[in-house]
Amino acid sequence: DAIVSNGGCGSALAHLLISSEESVAEMGCSFASSLISPLLTDPRGSGKALQQCMGTSSVGLEAKDDGLSSYRHAALALVVGEGSSGSQSEVSCLPSLIQIIRSGAEDSWGGKARSLKLQVVAGECLAAIALAVGHIVGAVASTPDSSLYLRARKALEIMEQERMYDVAFGIVTSASSRSLDPSRNTPRARLREAAGLTLLALSSCSDAAASYLISNKAVSKLLTIASESLAAPSALRGEWASRGLCYLETSAMLLLRAWKSDDPSCLNLLLDALDAGAVGLASRLVTSRVHLKHHDRAYSQMRIKIAVSYMLSAMFGIARADDDKDNAVGASRLYSAVDADCAAALAYGNPNETSGANGRTDLVASTVFLLSATLPYALRFANEEGDEPLPMMDLSEACILAVGGMCGAADSGASKHNFGEVQQSKFSHLRSDAAQMACKTLTSVKNGTAALLPSVLIGALGESLVVPALRLTLAMARNGHFEIRAELARSGMIVPVCDILQHSLSSGEQYTFSVAVAIVKFCGPCLTLDRSSNGSVAALQNCIQTLSCVLMMPESGGEDVNRRQTRMAPKNEALRTLEALSSNEALHGSLIDV
Image (cartoon, rainbow, N blue to C red; front, side, top):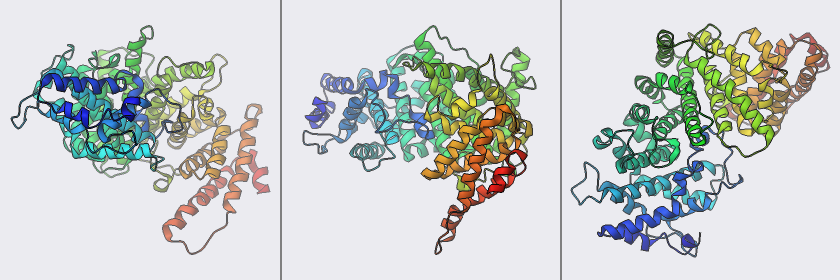
């Protein structure tokens, strides 16, 4: 902090970097690297990019400091500067670092190429800077007026002006990189991985970078690179990360961004991923064993499963949106790939405990099994209130999102979807099969332990899992048959869902309110009156009172059509839910009182 506040990352360092003397430039790069290298070597430096993109991460200005904030401030200072007065410097070190990398490019304009050693250090500095900017932009987006966020946005603008993503993508896909032995730890392998980390960070926060990568069909190329190098430990970060992890995470990031933003290119991205063998790769990685006795190796394997789960969530989400169309090319191709992978597993492997209800050993059954293996461990850890040795919570969250996508969960806002209606399509039966498997996992009671779903919904595994679990619950209820809804109702999840409904109504969270109301609409009529359901019946009775209050909310005139429709949506949802609950005799007394 003292170095940064006294201008140690400003013009003097930039002049060292542009020196024609290799030793001088190397000294400048090494100094810059010493200020920010923990952003690469510490797992927390790059561990929340996908969660932030999905909108489930709790990282923010108010969150507990992860110990890397000073390094992120130093990374910002290298781009926008920060003198002792706090004003921004006119000289940025970023162009000098990029020029060092460009000098070794195969299509360089003919200038003198810097040494490979210098390029590697400069590439690592650029990767750390990009990770810092991506983290800050994603973490404090909810407070866009903060000085830290504004400085990060300024740094991102400079990075986009310098076309940093173009340089990084060129290194990753260059002929010299393609010829690398993925098992060898060489300087060029370090440079390529640093470029991959740069792409991951930029794709998480830069629309320009994401558009560039999508237009250059980066998903298929990055998945191919990842499949070739996932088995080797990172040449840059150590054994806690796989060498191919950054490429897999970047592919997942691009798919997630396109899906969440309803980008017209998302269908083409899905098809590119399928052409690159994404389903086969995901199936192999989901079913791979985690060696818990070796901490770093287990951490690496879990990070891979987390990335795969987010990728699957986006792929099935895109297919779900495409299924509403007449031709449903994306959904057809995805489920055909899942069937082909299942056939290959049956032909060349042995059915095991990952088989689904119909004996299918496919990607969906394997992902549900991964969720069933992860949640109990994470729940035990949460109850122990100790330091988490492995990213089990993050893996649980990712698995919930992936299974939710397979069950047909919708991610967009309530204004675009009528959650309370069942929509039949060509592949509805496959989503129903997935819902049946997921329901069995989340509602079953084993060895006297309570069902997992209510514990997740009350926040026992953290607040970040509540909304993903709520989406998954709605997907199971909406796309499953009556027996699934009845099993969900018997699990006790109605109590936390009704609490979430009331809280979201008072806080104005319309999406969460709409999801909770739809769950009550589907599962409330299936609840039977017995001793074990007293709490759920009481919760539904209170929910009826809440929904009746929604119907009585006053209306105001002079609104445009869109605002009126948005304001009337909760009333319409409440009315349809009360009508559905009227079929449950246990609730007639409460309905009569209304």
